Length: 370
Image (cartoon, rainbow, N blue to C red; front, top):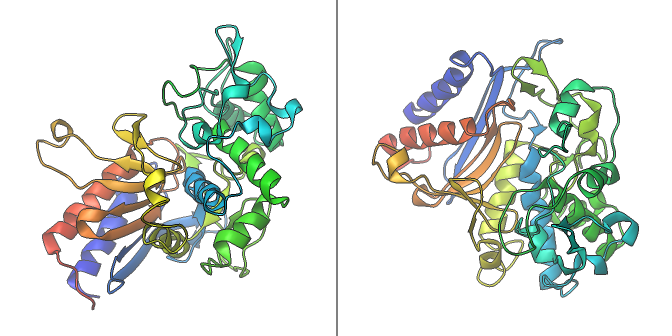
């Protein structure tokens, strides 16, 4: 093991050893030229069976799924199967969406477009984290009702029937998982196939992603004999909670770091969609949850210098997942980064870890093949 690989492995060990809430971590990086590829995993992926985490262990990538969903929509756009400015009611049954966007007594459902969903500018409520008056949000429901099954249509109904819209379509930006559940329904409507099959046809098979699939809804191309990594909220195991079976186009994928890196590299280098025409549409950044900006299914992270002790840190493009998962590209280093800490209690923790990783890389840059 070369010096840089040793430092990176020690860094991964430290993630687990110094944080009482993190029971496992997996991390992979790859340079843009493909000359340096490294992976490491630490901790226990299954406490009951005491199964050790490995670099090949699949994990819940959560909202990184949105980048896959948006990519398929952009393929549809290139194939002229869909107009991004088309109203979503052109593709979805009335019973599903009628009244899903009522703001200050006015129903704006008919004016919501595909682009509004992709960019989180629809104003539709987030079924996952918003809560009705006097009630609780869906995440807390998951924590407290581990055996309660839930469907995709029920998640959409939560936003439609119990939560009010946040603003007029196109006037602001607010993250909402409901947007991507609806995009999944549109994908099925356009293609006439179920969502896992469309993902297989458009992404998994062409890119040879053999170890990526939908939780409880499909199987990987290549059957694995490795259990999926458990994830937690604090010390509570929640990856087996049945309401998560409703995670879908918004966050239902399981994958490996190798498959994730393959996907992101293909997306950013023009192997899936046109790099010069279509990809820039995905990267029309809008401020969302500071310091994040959002395009179409893609996040842009650039920390202001007042948050970094006045040191300029590289910007990152990709997506984060609520399970502690991350899939990012650091252009300044031409470095692809994927991994997870399998812990849902701190959305900012993966970002901090990635920047610590980049600091290690910077001190030993340039990375050379070993």
